[in-house]
Length: 391
Ligand SMILES: Cc1cc2nc3c(=O)[nH]c(=O)nc-3n(C[C@H](O)[C@H](O)[C@H](O)COP(=O)(O)OP(=O)(O)OC[C@H]3O[C@@H](n4cnc5c(N)ncnc54)[C@H](O)[C@@H]3O)c2cc1C
Image 1 (tube, rainbow, N blue to C red):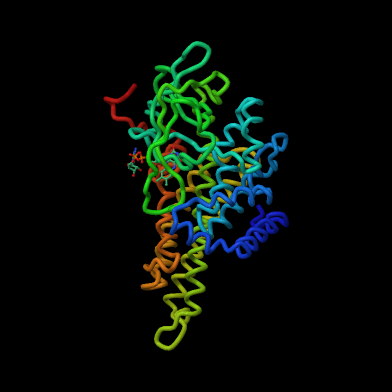
Image 2 (cartoon, rainbow, N blue to C red):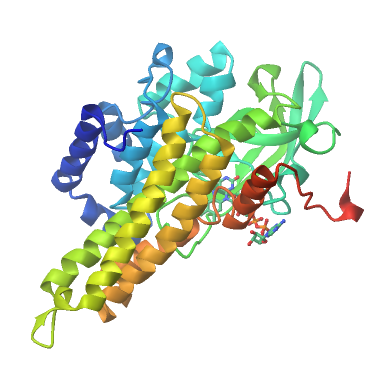
């Protein structure tokens, strides 16, 4: 058991920290919040630094690094803003890993090198207006049509929607019910019959594109099927890795908020002394640091266990659940440390708190993660379906 970062990991974190200061990422985060525009120019910068696709297979331009390397990079960037960390998240731990692990050679050649160069990105379309936590009830349907298929349906809340070049769409093959009918196809942004809904307005994550994906008789050639019906388990295995990325976002947001709050207590005076001299303020900062470190250990454990592959479902669910709730608490506590300035839009804390709240829903709610962990702890599945809706 080794809790220390190795030399390469320390160098990576240091490089990102220096880049953040040099490139004024703190100011960029504030600008992104104001304009609502995703900082697309970062794609090229990150690609040049080798941060995009560093976990992807080297034969397709990737870096062949373990998942934990990407977790460390995401955490460091998300201290400024999750929108700044998003390209590193998507290109290393996102649905592109489904292609890397299970795609055909042609699919890999078409997508992975372009992702590493920052010229392509892949979003995941799982959630539907009527199927979120109950993903197995999804209705987006693939029907056979000659040599290929037709895709019909709708996805909702899709991060990167409208901006990403490719979409990994979870869909039902024909009328096969339940999880056994679910697989995934890869779709390009410009496929005829594929359109986007209006951009979502969330309470936080300003600048993160998100919208519905609408499929009307979209022609899908057989070569675009990445995982066919009955391969739902593999999709979920790769999604466990995505959950480590979601958790890394939380580590970063909480770390950024804690640092803002700590620095503030050294400067802010009350009763003629800096507020860091009040023991209650010290204890609140220490409690935040303890929670953040506990989350960090859980998330690093899950990501380290994944190696170059995928994490255990139990460890990734626990890491995400704990980190999601920790980030909500720590950003809330940090906001309170700044008093009235914490509530003001002139300071980044209220933004960080709004951004933090997204992750306990995105990537599976903390309630659904507890259901997963309970089924593993009890060694049995607790069916959530109402008896009348059994298929
Ligand atoms: C910022 C953001 C980004 C997202 N990005 C993506 C994306 O890129 N791709 C994508 O496919 N989706 C994405 N989503 C959608 C997200 O995955 C879903 O919102 C989430 O899985 C919950 O589904 P739902 O919204 O339909 O809520 P519901 O499933 O309707 O749940 C509503 C509430 O009921 C609770 N609940 C439901 N069932 C149970 C149960 N059995 N036991 C206890 N409680 C239960 C839930 O925990 C929740 O609190 C994103 C969402 C957000 C907010």
